[in-house]
Length: 114
Image (cartoon, rainbow, N blue to C red):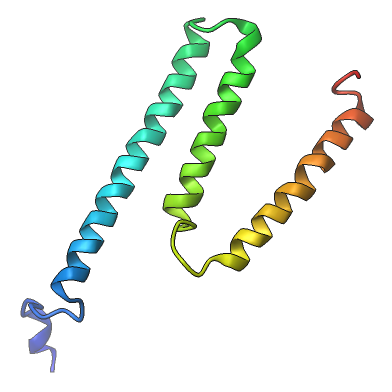
C-alpha cells in the first residue's frame, strides 16, 4: 500500500497555465517582500545616520510605514484579488473608527497639546 508514496508525483491537478500564474505570483511576492525589507532598512538608516532632519523624521517613517502596510494588504493579504468586498469594507470601516479613537485618546491623555 505504501509503495506508491516513494514514486514521484508527475501529474498535477493544475494546468500549465495555472502553474505559470502561480510562479508569476510567487515571484511578485518575493519582489514585494524585498521592497518591504528595503523600505525598513531605509527607515533605520535614515534615522540612525541623521540623514533626514529631525522635524521630518516622524512623517518620513510614517509614510514608509503606510506604504509597507498597503503592500502587506494587497500582496500578502490578497486584497488585490477579486471577491474581497466584505473584507475591504470591514477594514475601511475599522480605519475610520480607529483613527478618530486614537486621536481622541491622545487628546484626552494629554499626549498632544492643542
